[in-house]
Length: 294
Image 1 (spheres, rainbow, N blue to C red):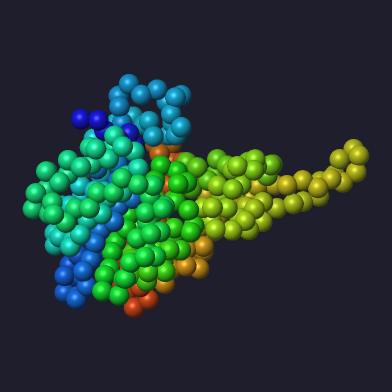
Image 2 (cartoon, rainbow, N blue to C red):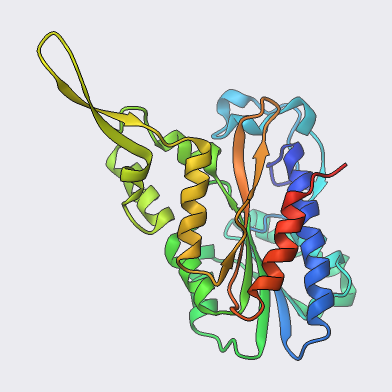
């Protein structure tokens, strides 16, 4: 069966943490009056793996090739379908036609919940914004997992999610695998990259946060130079700060996901949309994020 190439030993870790939250969430929600769903954008085939013969030089993100990460692992879609108590509805979104075709097989594999699995072959941002803006959320709640390869999720989508005041969000933020790469040392960032960063953060003020100007003496007098100060920590702190402008609650300490060389690739972040439920959601999520497996 075709598989979705993605991975790292941290893949197991992040999925296990999300699974723990889903169990806690479903247990609480089963006692409430709401109908609640699990929403997974960029769902892929429901699997994560790496091919043994993949050439790192040909990959967009060569960090995914790690000696300790060439293993098959269950993806977020499959994990959600196995959680007990079960969710009322499962919505899986995948744009790629081939991966979407494989995702459809989950209905046959999980017949007990087959009627409640909704498969969507669409661009995630467009579908999620429609889902959030054009549905009535008063009697509905959801947990959403955004696990993109890079910077596909836009700020407009995150705001739409927050505005429902009904969705708890887990998002894998590409702090090292994408954002830090676009932040050149001299601050000379090509226009296309600037637009992608603007769309990700929802503003252009990131440049003032990640860079500073200073005066430097030279043979021809003082000159003004731009210096990058945007470390992995600062980039993560800035994204958390941005999330706080939209969501009712945000976990203060996201989980860094590192490769075998201890370089941060992603931050596993959590935000709660419902003001009333946010304190409890943040407490549970931060406890899970703060724990190390093993």
